Image 1: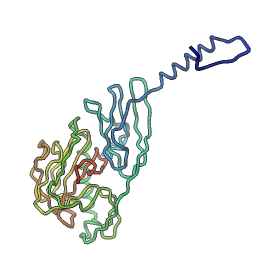
Image 2 (image 1 turned 60 degrees about the horizontal axis):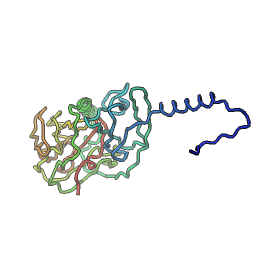
Image 3 (image 1 turned 120 degrees about the vertical axis):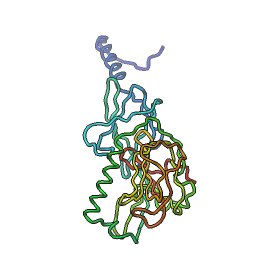
Image 4 (image 1 turned 120 degrees about the horizontal axis):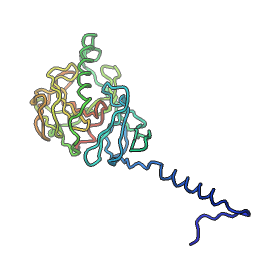
Length: 293
């Protein structure tokens, strides 16, 4: 058989040296890790993405990435029994840094993240104290945010439903989209944290996916009557400005079970549901999960 590699020499070959080099090449080639990590969805800022691991692989992110108050060390992303995992990419992220390990190797890999185009919204007519809270109100806002942030540190389930339904099946329109740059009473704020479904007061709100109720508060300063659900694998959803709450703390909900009704409580200029989805503390676009027309 004709060789693919031909060596011409006028001297006697040193077969020991050649054999040693070939063995060295083979050892190096087979010792380099070939990761089986794959992503099933595009890496886009503000998205909840799905990926796969083999049983031999482990995947980590920095604790600070989760935005849940844990700043030091690594956090392992646990897949389900089939090896599928989920991961949230924040708005404005340009790269994703992951640590991948197996029995013999550990490597930090960076992945490029694609950008989105975000809307800009101007909202006027809000009570001034809701836009620029006084010190006592700001202290309350901080305490309420920290409570919800703490609850997102642990997720009870390892199986997350991929098929969600609309939380307001009979909504009239989307009045504000996730990520919109908001200007409230001429004060520029961060990107909108969720999707607003405009509907009349009293319109039913249902669970878009199965999960356990981990937070119920009838009077949050910014979001009024509020509920939060743990859906598993670090994915939480919250429901704000409700007129009525129909669930209890620690109640398990099936997809489609009633949560409450649309209202206008908290900081709101009209009746709507403010629907938020997070991966631990990373806010992601709820519309990516929903069967919107």
